[in-house]
Length: 250
Image (tube, rainbow, N blue to C red; front, side, top):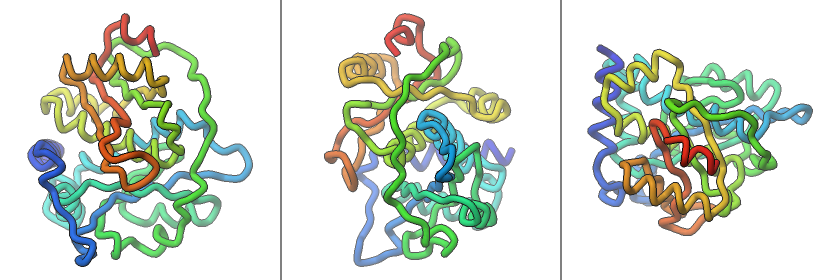
């Protein structure tokens, strides 16, 4: 029941056009954001694709956690975030700093921890002290096929986003995919641990995927343009599944 209520909140509050949501820089309480922290040790940092997969899974896990369906701070913070501009801020940590942020409410998946959203003026110190810059990781080719029934997020590699920026975009895509899909599908996905694949495609292939998304009700993420990309840029797409003809292009 808790997950159903969490999904209802996500579904109802994010279905409206994001341009109808407001924030007022003069009132910091209205500027809400989910913080993401990537564990980036100097030695053996994680691969970029693994970070993007972890970020997408951690974000949707926060939105659909049991606490999101129960009265209390977790649900209240999510509701305020959904009702304003849905921002995400990605930071980096290593060593003790990474261990410290595990005490802040959120969900860790692999090398990424996603936190319960808050006003940007109220970010816990363990998180706010972490650097936002320096989250870049080199793009790499991804081996292995995507299962025909596996959710897929496609990112426009032509935008040359940093790993931190791309992590925020795939997080947005995964939560909007959950908001769009029926409850039964989402419950099964959650029980399996939110498996998904992320593929970064060149702009030509991305354009083909975008046309497919618009024809088949895929999730289209258009960025507000606060950092790195121009306002309105389509950064990521999400699909509950893709046919082999489309997967072959990725």
